[in-house]
Image (tube, rainbow, N blue to C red; front, side, top):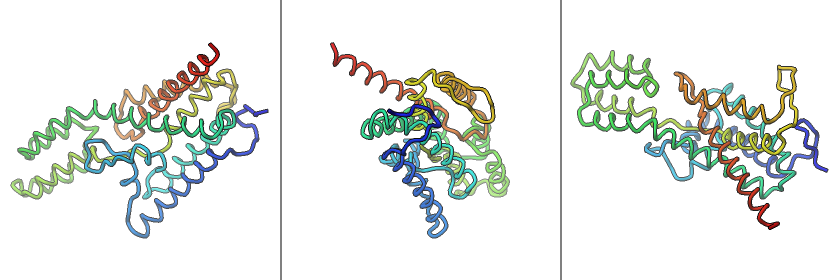
Length: 279
């Protein structure tokens, strides 16, 4: 009989075990390549915006195996540790119930769905900025650069912009500074999303959907909470954080929600398919 307790001991199933091993090995590879060859693997395998010259077709899949920042061990450790802990905690229960093939399909559908939702939200957010950037490329200048930087503070690093301007103002007619200003404005479009969080949030949603009344303890709060309320709270927090879109927040909240959304869709499809078999 499968142990459905979140903290219950059971043998680690094949897919969850291998996903954890692969993710840990990829983090080690990230640090090794940065240190030995100065190659940032997340720039190659992380998910870039579709309009970025760094976007590649494989990134919606490979971004799930990248974590943190290879130049910041602390961020990377906590990013992968939390994701893999959640995958171990909830994923093993789902895989033991569904089997390896069905769980693997579910995991990647949630991860790819998270990437799709992230891209969709970025497109809505970035299209006005892309339009102004295209116009700026035709006639770059200090005044117009300042206007765009101030109009889109979430997409332009103001500190970097101010440092750059202090140099540009000494030579306002420089073609090099004009070209550099375009690159600086476009930096936001070249940022990569990394992490298995979208797929893991789908796993979390599935657990709450299938075992809604399972009581769980959330450290450090010594009060049991049902899985359905935990999932609901997470979803609301992610929605609020995504809509607030505060400065300095580099978490892909809508990717997390996308993982949950595609988990719900796939669970409903499977449920209806199973029901139809008996009619």
